[in-house]
Length: 325
Image (cartoon, rainbow, N blue to C red; front, side, top):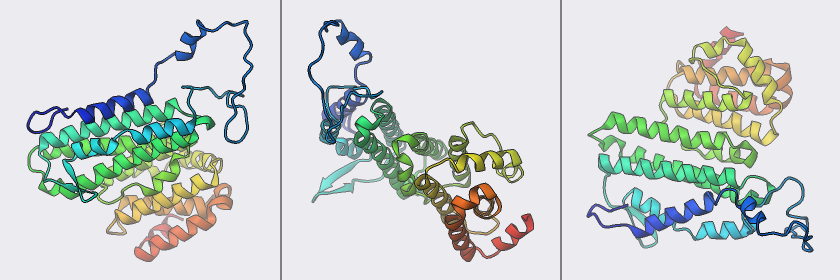
């Protein structure tokens, strides 16, 4: 990468290179090393983790001959802060990052490209180090995905009003990248990344973006793609039946984050009770927490409290819900 004067930014290149090495280690490394090991020689060593259990037992595979804490320590030493400072033109002043001015269109495109590359690396890291052996490292990669999305959202919401050239294209690029980052967290529930979704930046989400997030999250829950518009979602009995069946199979913490985040997406992004997405979420809370026998047992308390909160802010929603009963 180069700065505005054409000078190479070596520390950014080095940081991204180190991140790539850590997140995408040499493939088939174990198979290659087998040619150097005598198959007739028994191993007299047993590696134990911090809890005294065999690290290589079961189906757990070792990506590197390093522990979870070792890899986490290496990741923490990569200067990712410098990458973000370069992407968003920040300078460190009195231990705080300060903006040096508004980003031009070309600089926004560069920032999007850097963030997309970071998301790709963090996603590779989560997939490479999945499993109990690397649970802390996988959690850290999830936090970095959220951190990248939050940084991007904060700067875009602050400066989008001043974007004059290529505004429509930049807006589409931002929405695509935002969806890409949140979708990575949605698709990695096994790494406990859903707990991070309660912290996603909700301010400034367009109606299209909110419904697209709704579609992707529900697609992940039911295990198949969903293709319908917001009006069709009210009348698809097969969809609601499948959702009810799948939702009760989720762990309680994941169900709680799912319901709470949906309610926040609806209430924070709506200005009127006529908002279609707000009505959709209100009906979903009614369906899951009050009407369906299967989900009522596990969702009643949370769904009822969220529905009361939304209706207290948008009282006309009561009429909408009663009309659909």
